[in-house]
Length: 417
Image: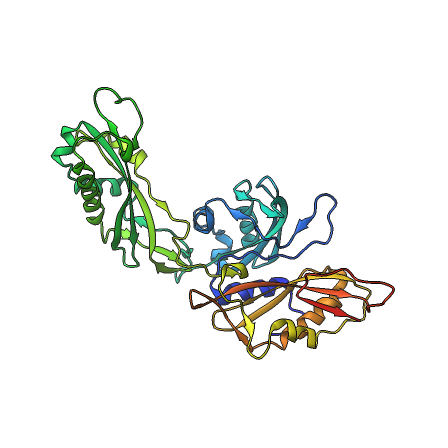
């Protein structure tokens, strides 16, 4: 690792090495004309619906510029923006560029997410936070846009899926005698080869088709008065068998261009008459995706793991206290330092929160962290090594004097002149 890496180069290296599409990290801004903008808070902003929905949104809204395709331009554009306290975004900046057309496309995509964010929180209060969003542009061998991220989908689309389900859906005779319709949420996994596994009915709702209550909406089966209790099992079996029949008819989900197994939920409508209105079928039976449908997280935060990353030969705090020196500067204050430790022990960082006028402080921190390369033990979660974004604080204070007592600090390390 070289000293004085630019932030854009650092972020690009992090994301390429870890096959991430995104992670939350940004440069702090020491002051703004209005409310403070944070670079890191305990409750970072989140896209509504989670990572899966954000990846889907980016994939479905990306238009690869023809100019870039003809030039064979591809790679990672990194943009940052402020997530405001109302969920909108502002001040979009390109931190890592590829070409004018791809940079502009990344800015356009980022702008479309405005209003779709859960705000960041500090001390349980909404705050403005600068967020980093990397967007990858890739071309296949024929210079066509390569699909990097996609959730599973039925071959042929929504109509073909509904037709396939009902082709194999047999409504039990006992259900028809009860004059009821059923709506079942069926969970299942679409594997990397497009097969279906792990089928389970997560919930059943019923409604009358004739008589009193026919005009009411579906209600939970547990509160519905069904004379023949075995009907619920029959309904579940029918829905499960219909879903199972579609095995092999699915396009698997993709992450970073590679097939992944993903869990989905499909509402299956079983009409009491055995014949549902096709429009009702299409409007009801839409796939939904679990928030963690894309395998385990690529990057965890420290509070999410069981064992934090550490140096092999001594605690990080002790190492920093031993090697950090107060640079020749009048700077005094707390510096937030973030860095990544990968599951194989590789290290990338640090990102510091000091302003451009305090480069000597940032350079000193970078010098010492450079000494830690190839000396890391990764974090652990459920006994497995995982990649972690770790954040510490370093206090730079003047020489301690008896006539100027210092207040207690919660910083990881204190450096004095």
